[in-house]
Image (cartoon, rainbow, N blue to C red):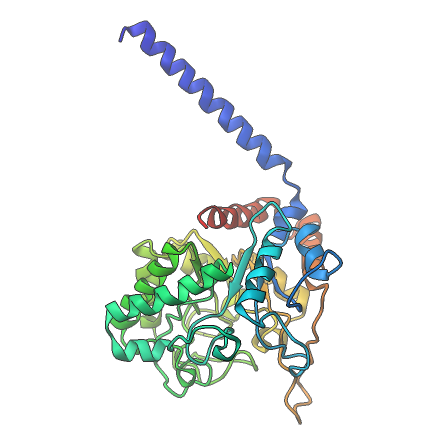
Length: 385
C-alpha cells in the first residue's frame, strides 16, 4: 500500500470517528433529564396482568422508569390482594407485556435466592430451589452449577432479567433473623461464599440475567432485621465481610451491587445506603467499582423510620446510589408499636420520587452530570441483557 493511500485511510477513519462521536454526543444531549431520572427508579406494583390504564403502565410509558420488582405476596393488604404471580404462563405474559411498553429495555427483577426466599412457589407450578445455606453445606461446585443454571433458566423463560442475588453476606451470626436464620448465606467461610457466588453469577450471566450481589458492606453479623428497624452492626461487623465483594469486583465478576441499610460506626454514622463514605469512598474509590449500585428497598424501616421519603432519596443519590428501589410492599406495623409508621401501597410512588429528584436538580442540590453518570451505568447494564 502506497503512502498516499495510507494517509487517505487514516483521514477517512478519523472522519468516521468524529462523526460517530458527534452523533453520540447529540444523542446524549437529546435525552430529557426527566427520562434519565426515570431510569434511576425501580418499583413494585400490583397486578397479575396490565392494561394501558394501569398506574404501572403509565410509569413505564410516560416516566420511563428503569425497572420493576416482582412479588408473590401483597403485604400492605395483609395478603388480601393478589400481587404479581399466579402461574408460569401468567407471569411470562405479564413480563412480556411490561417489556413491550417502552422501547428502552425494562429491568424486571425478583428476589429468587432459593429456600425461604422465593417469589415462585411450587404450589403455583414453579420449580423448587434449595437455599444458599443448603448449597453451601453441600459445597460441591458442580452441584451449585446445576442448581444455579436451573434457577436462571427458569427466570429467563419467564422473562425476568435481574435477580437480587446471590447473597454474599458471611454467616457470622447464624441466629441473625434476616440472614442466618433464613438460610440465606452460603457459609461463614470466605472461600465458600466467594466460590459459590461466582458459579451463581456465571450461570445467570449465561442466561442473560443480571445478578445483584448483596448486601454491601455486609449484613451477616446483625442481630436485627433492617426491614423492621435499625440494624446496628457496629460491635459485630468486621472487615472480612467486605472480602467477598472486593474479590468479585477485582475478578470482574459483577457489574451491579445492592447496598444494605445497616448502621455501622466503623465506617460511618449514616446507614450504608445513605453514606458517601461507604458508597462513594469505599465501594467506588477504594474497590474501584464502576457498575450500577442499587439500594435495598428504600421503604424498609431502617430507613423510613428515621428519614423522610424525600430526604432519603437526596442522601442516597449524593452518596452514590444509581438506582432507587421502592418495593411498594411494606409489611403492616406489628400490634402495640406506636412508633411504627404505616407505609401504604402507593401507585404513584415512582412519579413522586422522580418529581423530587427533578426538583433537586433544579435547585442545584444534585447536578445533571451526577444524574447522567447513573443513567449511563444503567444503560450499559441493559445493553448486556
